[in-house]
Length: 342
Image (cartoon, rainbow, N blue to C red; front, top):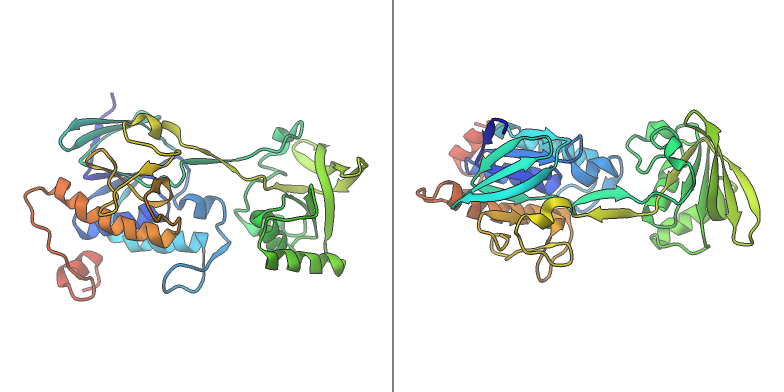
């Protein structure tokens, strides 16, 4: 067994809700370590839509997924959380009251009094289209997420899909791509009506192409895409010249090892009570998209609220002999000192 890392709280998942939880915990003098399966912080915001605007963060009219992540990282800087990225928590074992031993797939062992599951919906994997040999182009010419728009400048981009992601990136990449072709199996879309209207206007103006059908084969060499073979709805076979393809077939959610941690599950989600968002196991909390309760809404702002209430209850486990006095950051000199604003 490797050396044990001791901390007050282990947060599983470094998305926005987990990051803000570290802020609330820090205000109450609780130290936190993070473990996240991704190689970067920010969760889905940073991985799937880093440059896409978010409009429903209170007090911020719009911010990108990466922008929100950066702001949260700046906010928790005074509390010096430690991040263990590219790792997955495999086991959570209760060894005290309260005390947990958590082990990652990299062999790291943590001991903590509180575990916070902030893992979104679990581990999200993009659905791979059933196209023979597509693996050879993944990461070079075939991408399942847009992490940097500049990557697609002056490219012939084939976007496949009919949902919000496909339409959003069709519209966002159109100004910088050489040519955009949107391919969907039918002339009906699951995306926001306004986005569909904008796309059809571009097609009508000859500024992009819309094709109906499915990709059956790819051509190219050394991972560099040259074109795609498309079978139309009338069984016709045509070729689309493209050097980049973005398939948006949705995501597959994999709950992963959470199912083996002894906590109750309900339809692959973690049921919690709503005074502190604690699971059926005392000392293990779940916040953000991974939890469920009556009236649950999957919004980042709701996860922030859950993290704040979770921290109040967590304090009882970490400091059982210490009375918690609620304070406001606007008026508490001690909290302002912790934040470095005095």
